[in-house]
Amino acid sequence: MMSLVEEELGGPTVFRDLAKLDFDYVPEELPNREEAMRFLARTYRGLTQGGTREHALVWGPVGTGKTAVAKRFARDFATVLGKKGRRLESVHVNCRRRKSAALAMLGILNHFEPNYPERGFSVGEMMRDLRKHLERRDCHLLVILDEVDALLRADGSNLVYDLTRFNDETGQAWVGISLVLISQQNVLELLDDAALSTFKRSNTYQVQPYTADQLEPIVQQRVDLAFAPGVVDPDCVSLIADIAGENQESNRSGPGDARLAIELLTKAGQTADDEMRDSVMADDVRTAKAYTYSVVTTSKLQNLPKHPLLVLAALARRLERDQAAYATTGGVEEMYHLLCEEHDESPRGHTQFWKYLKQLQDAGFLYAKISGKGHAGTTQLLSLPDVPTKVLLDKVRDLLE
Image 1: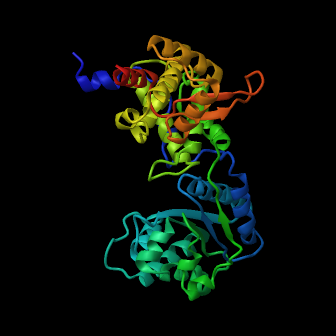
Image 2: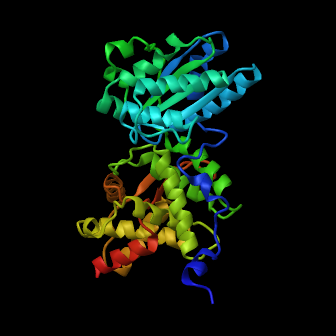
Image 3: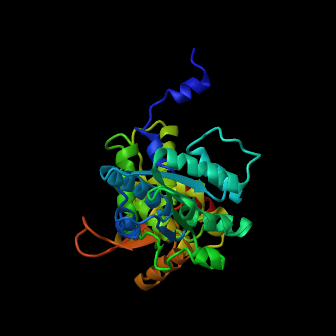
């Protein structure tokens, strides 16, 4: 007889490779980050032309692909240099976890010597040991200091200065260190004068948040990599991109957050697995959004007047009836008139109906966008970004009764 755990783990799944949805996974292609990759290529070109070091700062909001860009560039750059007979190693250090110079240096050394002692050595001694590793391998090291603002605030900029001046004491021209600093803000202002003097101010790149249109190919890429073929409804991709592209409610993420998009996709797939279904539908995405950060709560619904509540219920019923991610405004208005009839209410006019939609959109209860490909003419499409249709209909029914 199978145990409960064995029964759960042995059930059907919509996933093919869940690892492809890990935040740390870096795909072969990074959609809509080509210009950031070109910036790094131009910045470090000097290393292919006899230069001994280059340093850059990449900054921007959470979930904009900064770390992925740096890691992807490091891999591709190592391949290019390898064809020229030069060896490049790279190491990624999360400075939010390693907020002191000693801990960051230990993270760098662990790349070459995993069992390097955690205590007993100064930063200067660790620098000397690092130099020995690089000279032994005759290689250049690209150090990615991620969330570097945490290190700079906690321990100052001495480590950044030491790493940028590392090459001054190196005998071999190719042996040395180049830096990529990554932060949510422009951290040049946190560097002291000595460290700042080692940076070229032009070697900074600000990464902008993704738009919903830019997020869509990222979500589709993860669908293709992580899920079995054909199990994710195509409308789910658009819905996830729209939610993440417009998200402004959560304290931990802002609009254009690719991490939120990947989290929603993962949770939507897990919801389908939990219900033992072989496909991921729009309501799974709405369930995922409710888990991550819910805007549509019972208390907020209780504060809505009767007719805006009926409009919201009309949208939910239309989506449920059509099993769709989006509904046209005209279709929702038809359903609103039907609901008014069921509840012995006189429907409001078309202009007032549109005002209700705008109020609901501004409050975060619904999402609206202009139709694109696949729709005749131009119309407004509406969706529930935050709650499954059945759950919303049950809540509204209780409130109306």
